[in-house]
Image (cartoon, rainbow, N blue to C red; front, side):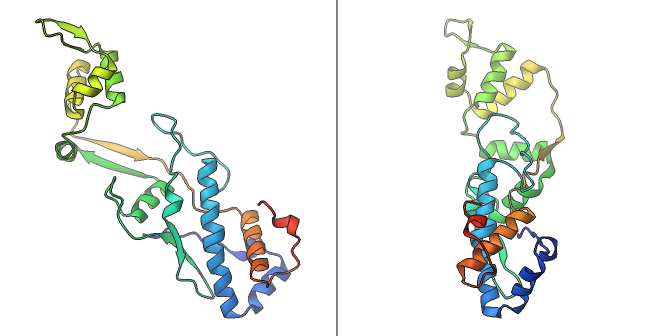
Length: 233
């Protein structure tokens, strides 16, 4: 699956810069566009991920839980190919991620644009069977502690269980069942799962202008570009 990002040079290039692109031989244009994809757009995606923000500078939606950095591996999955004198394709590499079972392109599209999906209880049940060996998570243990969960003490009574014990001795399914029982919540037939969009692939007009200037200079076909204008951008 491709994520299409269109740019119109008329929006950010001066007249002499547009002319330089028009008169450029096809072989040079093809090389320029390939370099823009690989060294420009993909590298900018990496910078967006490092700063945890969209191309327009807005910070991404925060995680529902935890503070771990997001999407750190996604830019490594990008590749630039199919370059012609008119375009270059920046896409995700072919293949499936073992952890999620999703193709790389599907995962990238979900993260770029966001997604809301409905999961049924039957789907969750099937997934929980497949995850029967999964241990109680830290979030589940925290919830159990809040609900006052107690474990058998081996003497016919009960003792308050600490989080370490719960994570070691309860499975993910057991913890879920106990939480529902203690919380008094009723089982839902279906529910919505929302993944907020965290745009990482794209660049602002000024960033694109710098990319083009840098790559034009690199292929020794640039207009009058000063080194200080592109250094460290």
